[in-house]
Image (tube, rainbow, N blue to C red; front, side, top):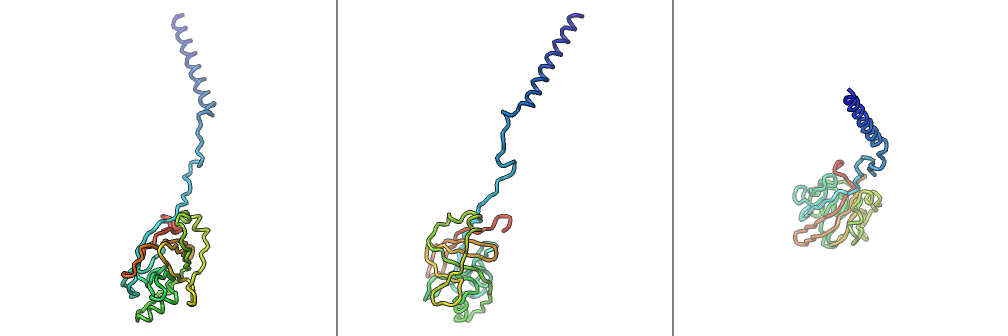
Length: 203
């Protein structure tokens, strides 16, 4: 009987000690705590939307070449449908223009083309600057895009471009930058590579 009592007493002591250690582990767990600096919330992604398109303009006919950038979908479309248009003019070379620019309308009239695009996009040539300066949404949102023009030509939002130039553009709340490359005088082709302040969810 004494032996059984002794065994029960030992069992109670061991369980009491285990309970005490377990409680201490719950109460004194400060050293084991890791703090999530983001509070368990994913960090905000500040990357701007990257794009690259090839534009070509041998003709302003509505369904001929894909001469214009559709800013909403970041794809090349015909001149009558886009927001930022390329064309070649013998006196001025490569021109990136708002669809309602005066030079593109003159060219359409000269070519007897029914050009009906009246959209307005603010266009500015920033010169030979780094695209990396605008690869964040915050940088693009803070960019002030002002209307550019060609000397002695009426109406703004049309700019001459050369290889390496970066063109800034804005339509509504959408702002972007595009670097000019791949110029071809023969095929009237150009490549625009850049960023817009769109996100994957808003595109």
